[in-house]
Image: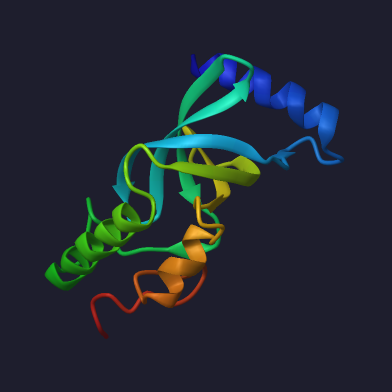
Length: 143
């Protein structure tokens, strides 16, 4: 299934994008799992009656680590970030993916995720203080 997604996205990328490493979207998707504060799993509609399940890293933000926190405070903040994502994009809700690229670690993609009310999920997390801009010093555990 994953191989199919990679092949399909590659064909679409080459067809519709000047850059072969990005799918501009929009791609409609249903939220099927909240992994943590900056990753969700979706069922994306890639063609008529064709869907794939893929993990999506939210573009441009970094949330506290839930699974390998460096301190207890980070784990607590990670739970809050995950809850914030769940409230903004609950299971079964529809989102739209744009600017889809491969994740550097593999096995997932990076995308801008827009909620059904038209707001970017990453921007909402930043505004709520549940994430920081990618590349910013992580303040979770203090100095």
